[in-house]
Amino acid sequence: MILIHIITNDYDQAAEVADYLANEKLILNAVMLEVSGRKRITGKKYKPIDQILVMGKTKALLFNTIDKMLRELYPENMPVLYSIPIVNMDWEQANELVKETVKV
Image 1 (cartoon, rainbow, N blue to C red):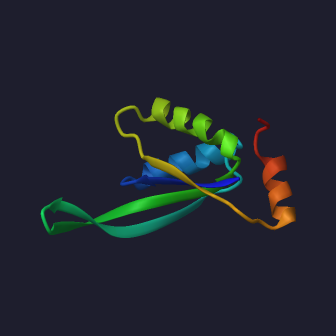
Image 2: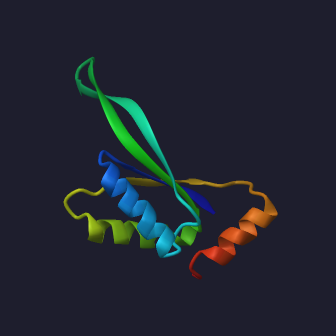
Image 3: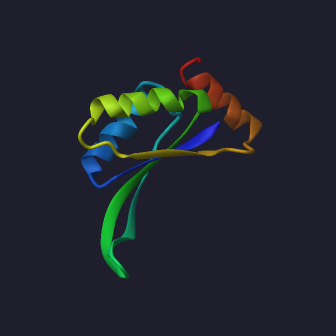
């Protein structure tokens, strides 16, 4: 199991991605957070950036499906996509994740 992270600069894109993944049962649910960060522009100069982080629990085997779907939906504006392994999880919650996401 993994926690998928999708980062975008566009709130509407984040909401669309979160809804799509949940509706297609590619993630169990979605959490959206507005995050502030800093991006290096040159040398030691930085600029502030505001982004939206979409997180969702899913099966590791669904990562490539999610990646492909995002690349098809956003060929010109692909959001950042990566995952973090879930090492331990409550058994009841783990069973819910298995039951409520697509079978692979």
